[in-house]
Amino acid sequence: MGFIKDAIEELTWRGFIKDVTDKSIEVKEEKLTVYAGFDPTAPSLHLGNLIPVAALRVFQKHGNPVIVIVGGATGRIGDPSGKSKERPILPEEDLIRNKEKIEVQIKKLLGKDVPVLDNYEWFKNFGLIDFLRDVGKYVSVNRLVKHTFINNRLSREEFLSFAEFTYPLLQAFDFLHLYDRFGCKVQIGGSDQWGNIVEGVELIQRLRREKVFGVTFPLLTTEDGHKIGKSEGGKKTLWLDESMTSPFDAYQYFIRLSDSDAIKLFRLFSLSMVKEEVENIIEEHRQSPELRKVQKLLAREVITWVHGKEAAVECEKLSDFLFSKDPKTNLEDISKRAISWVATTVAKDEIKSLQLSDLFMKANLVKSKNEFRSNLMNKGIRVNGRTVVSDMPATELFRNRSVVIIAKGKQRGIVKME
Image 1 (cartoon, one colour):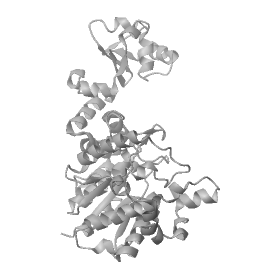
Image 2 (tube, rainbow, N blue to C red):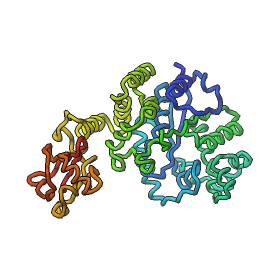
Image 3 (spheres, one colour):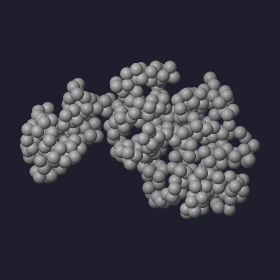
């Protein structure tokens, strides 16, 4: 087994690798410990974070131990890389809550035995004088000011706090600490982390005279220029927490991707498949792109990994029920959990003041009453499978039932009364 060499080879063909600090990592036939870090600035990881987590899975697959840091210390400052202004400081109780939730997600994605560490553990008793002596003395300001985020702020004469300026030193010390404690020799991250990773590599080489490695991934964007994992024109983040982004919203994000974006992400996330299988599926897709085979398999792979096989199956049922011209799925086939992902909920007291047209607007099937009336005239409005020819009080729809299926053309929606 080639351990790190085989992992780098797989990461390369899948499209993970942008830069490495030393090319010799590509031929190393030994087991190396690898780490990635995430600051708990939100109560959940998001889809973009899934790229380094997927890379860690590839390292695991080839026999390399992995470590994750959830930065209780660095999160108190917030990584300024790629940011044009300083992050707001989160209350400590929020950081603690976020850290606990992200730790649960990491262990679900990578396995319960993966070490998830909080860097506050080794920074909380590290005094400023000791830090400047033991770390600051070995870091070049000349190199720091060349970091992209620092250089951009200075060149535009924008505010740059000392806390942000020293963030790369904190991340560098994380790497040193993991090297000393676990023999960790590889740090991975997005390409915006390159400067921070290099500081860690340089610090270990200066203090321990040991060669270690940094690996970065490209910051992926869709054809329309938005970051991977942003929906609704880049405005909405797709979170991994089901209470923040439903599995079905995430599923639909993948289904709607362009062919080129879907193929790019399919290579990254089809971790249960070998290279030959991945390339064969991509070729089949290119022969019949209208079947959207890559989009569907990509959606199934990611939802299964993040939310479980049952959630992936429910997403496929919902997609069939809501969007297929001739659906094979009935409402009774869909779980209450899955219905909650898509149903438009209306309070029982509110129903009394609403018309059918209002329900269509609430479910985003029409934008206005005029659009509703136009579809009504063209016999394009259906309720529970039957065509309706006039607007009506919503109360008539909910007699002896709490869930109603509404449709405009091929689009369907579910309205739930509570």
